[in-house]
Length: 399
Image (tube, rainbow, N blue to C red; front, side):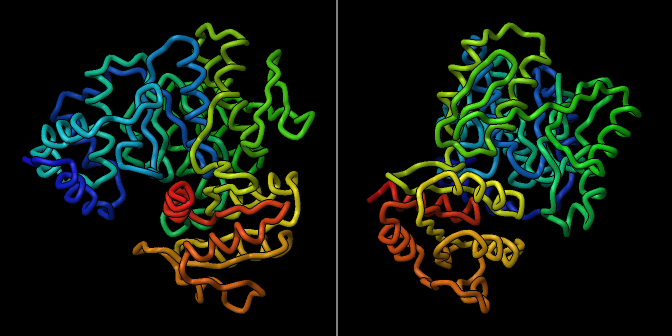
C-alpha cells in the first residue's frame, strides 16, 4: 500500500525493463475476469506516427460528442500523461488508487511497468464510463502488452527499421510483428505503401478474414493545406508528416460508422496539437520526437518548408541508429549541435559526434541556448529522442 503517488511510481517505474511479452498481462486479466472485454477499443500501431494518429482520432471522436480514453507512451511530462480521458491526464489520486488496487495482481503475475500502466488504464476507463478507448502500441505489436484486446478497428501507420534487436532485421520480419495486432474479422487500415510490407498485411488480413484498406495519403495544396474527401484542412506548422496521420485518423472514425460531420472533423484536427511533434515553443524554435530514420526524414521534409538558416540540436539513445540520423541532418541543415542528457540509455555527445563536422556542447541546456542564439531569422529544431525533447521542452518552457 502506497501513501503517495511519488512512492508508488518509484516502485512501478523500477519495473520498466522487465521481459517483453504478453503472457503475464493476459494471465492477470484472466484472473480479474477479462475486464478489457467491457470496453470498445481502437488499436493503433506502426513505427512512426501512431501517437499523433491516436490524438487525431481522439479529437474527432471527442468533437463528435464521445467520451474517449487514450493510452499512449512514452510520456513527455508526467507518468499520468499516458492515461487520458478527453485529453485530460489521470489525476494523481486516481492513479495512486489503481496502483494500490492492483498491487497484489501485478506482484503475483510479475507485471512490468508498461503492463501495469495498461492494466490501470483499463480499470480507470471502465470506472469512468468512456465510449471508446484508443490503445497506442508500445513496441512492435504481436507481443506488445496492448495486444490483449479485441478492437472494433485496428490501424498500422507504417513500418520501418526500429527496435531491430527485438522485431527483426528486415522489413518483412518487422511487418510480421506489427501485423500481430490484426484480429479475426476486425477491419485493418494502413497508410503504408511499401509492397513488401503490404504483402504481409494483406496475407495476415486474408487469413483472419479481416477487411483490409490502404488509406490514400492526400496531396497538400499549400504549405500545410490538404483535403480528405470533402474536408479541407490546414494543419499550420504541425509537420508535413501529420497529413497522413490525420488522413488515417479520419478513415478510422469513418470505419466505425459513426456520424462525425465534416465541420466536426475539420474543427477537431485543426485544433489538435501533440506535444513534441514538431511543436513550436517560441518563434522559430521547435521540438520534434524524431528518433529513427523515417522520423528524421519526415522532420527534415517539414523543416525544408521553413525559413533558413536551419540549426538542429541533437541527442539520442545509444541503441538507436544515430549515425544515420546525423548523416541525414548534415546533408540538409546548416549547423548540427550535438549534446547529451541524463538518462540511463542516452548516448554521450562524443560518441554521437564521432568524426562528423558538428558542434559539440555536452550540457544540453547550453546546447539549446546556443541553438536558439544561432536561429537568427531562421529555424531551430531540437530532436533525436522523445526522452531528450522531454527534458529540452521543460527547459525551454521554464525560460
